[in-house]
Amino acid sequence: MDKRLQDGDITVQFYRYLWAYILVALSGCLGTVVDGIIVGNLISEDGVSAINLSRPITQFIFTLHLLINAGAGMLVAYALGKKQIDEARRYFTRALGLSGGIGLLLAIVGGLMFPTQTARMLCDHEQILPLAQDYMQVLLIGNPAYIIMWGLSTMVGVDGSPRLVSLAVIVDNVVNLVLDIVFIQVFGWGIAGSSTATVVGHLVGIAILLCHWRNPENRRLQLVTASDGLLPSLKKIFSQGAPLAVASICLTLLLLSANKIVLSTTGRTGIFVFALCMNLLQVYNLFLSGTCQTLQSLGAIQVGKGDDASVRSVIKRGFRFITTAMVVTCLLVWIFPEGIARLFGCDEPEMIAQSNQALRVFALSFIPFCYIYVLMIVYKLYSQHGMALFISFALSLTVIPVLWLMAKFIPQYIWHSYLIAYLIEAVIIFALHKGRHIQFELKHE
Image 1 (cartoon, helix red, strand yellow):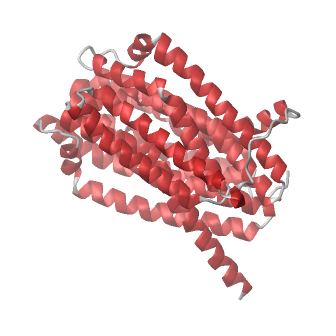
Image 2 (image 1 turned 60 degrees about the vertical axis):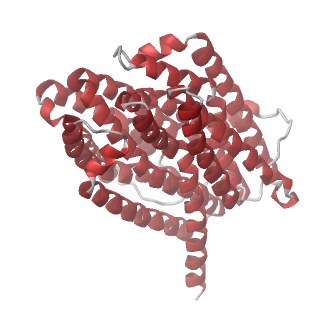
Image 3 (image 1 turned 90 degrees about the horizontal axis):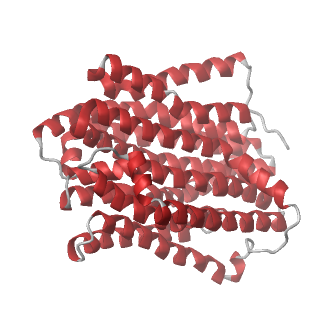
């Protein structure tokens, strides 16, 4: 009976965290998808391509968030699980300070000092370049809002208010959607209006998240001024966030490389089709991010308690949910590929024909990607840091050489590159796991 009660409690907590974090993921991914849909219909297909060419910047900003806030969030969860409130507050304070400081530095350098040079590094197509530059500059200037929004979402969720996180993200995205249309259609700001709307939405989300501290019962996490142990705590934050951050920075390199390879191999049509595929990945990431954030927060709390059974229960539910989400998403893409292309304003027959083929292949490709990513979190929870770090590198870096080889020798099959790369990686991970005789057991550090 006690076991059934415990499983029931874990189930309730799992889905409570899961749906909150899925809504958090909307802030990072759905905003981009909405931008693409509106830009495609109100501006042009080239506008969709410009947003995709700007995506390495968004991914790099997200990398900074993961390095700082994902790592600090896990440490805060561990500390709260052990009732070490002062320790949790120190990590919270340092994460918030780092988020604001690094975001401000990136805004000054990339958004104000070198906006043209930054755009040219990512786009060399003269027809698309002006759109890409306008979008990127606003994105860079407003990047502190991105990092702080995602960071506060992580901390408020860990501190026990996932519903407030859900509310903040819902309002964030509603504001973004409404202002997209207002800034582009009414004010005539063009594609810059799209990125401006996203930044304003994040600022509104931050204001809502700050309401968490209005309730005296929600003050376990507070800003503190103690500077003792600063370097050791920063080292721990970066160490915890490193696997996810490395995976993200590798994804940044992949996005940059893939954009250049696809653009040079398939031209304007191909880069638009690839943009559609990357928007499809954002839909998968919606469920993947929610699952992984839940594993990190709820799973880390159970690790802090030393409750191995509850950790395994959380992991089991995570894999079950991501499997269901992937199957449903994949089926919808296979049935309605043309509808996705038209949703982004595409009406050119050649683009639609290529989109139908590419979207179906990519829908299958992201299935092994999602499983591997969740497995990386599992390795991290069980302190298998070497395997977690290996997966962080391999997730993206495996794709680059495969994509290059396919583009060079059999370009007609270029859309299969991701699927082939992830299947190769899955085989390597399985071999390493068996060869090193890895056991998933809690280690108390």
